Image (cartoon, rainbow, N blue to C red; front, side, top):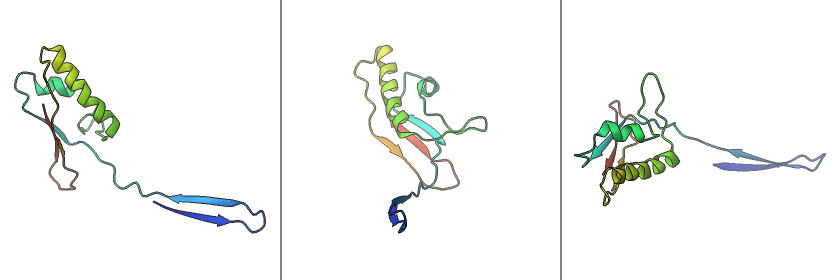
Length: 107
């Protein structure tokens, strides 16, 4: 991000201009749950606000929602009797390769 200050010589007002480069929008192609053996991965996906990109809906990655999803997963596990459940390392691949890149959740 860069900024520029210009001064109008007649009115002596200053204008601050921010130039923002948002980069490319990140889309979630796939979410994998590593270590989820008892609870079904589809059930875990259903409780998440983060959705995979499909033809009928977008899969925009929103960091805040993703953080909340980790807590939803923990709550779901705990409500099913897994009181010591943890969401471990999250691995994300933001490459622009042609093949879909998954988000891995270690649960």
